[in-house]
Image (tube, rainbow, N blue to C red):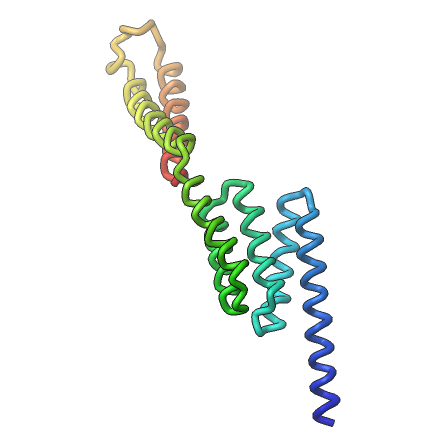
Amino acid sequence: MYRKAAELQRADRAENVIRLKALNQKASLEPNYRKAVGIYHQGIALGEKIGGDPKPLAKTYFGLATEQRSKRKFPQAETNYKNALDSYRKNEDLRGVKKVESVLENLAQERNTLGNRILKKVGFATAIIGFLGSVFFMTNNFTGYAIAEIDQQSSSLFSVVLFFIGIVGLYFFINKK
């Protein structure tokens, strides 16, 4: 009776591992980012249910991280690459470990690319200009009609627009790491 239960448990585990591999394949072929991420999350839930850190779970984390990296969601991608690295290490898969370590190095370099640094600086400059410009146009007393004869309503409108531009610039400055 115990033998039969153990055989059923092994068969159930093997079936779930096959299902996890199928989910990984389906997610990797899915062109829609959100659907692919959803499938990967299903795979992670199934892999954790299986237990014993099967190798397909490491591939699931790796695939999810790759999707996130393609959308430049670097913090989430880094977390999932590290989860994949842990799974590969538990499975003693040296090839997988080396692969993930290499990708993590490339990810670190990609996060600090020139484009990201420029975008961060542009975001900071935009925030400063937007906020200072909104204060400048807050009242006609500041402009003194030196730029042009602008009525109070137009000046307030400029102020609000520049304030929102400052907020957008601040968003880019804060979120680009």
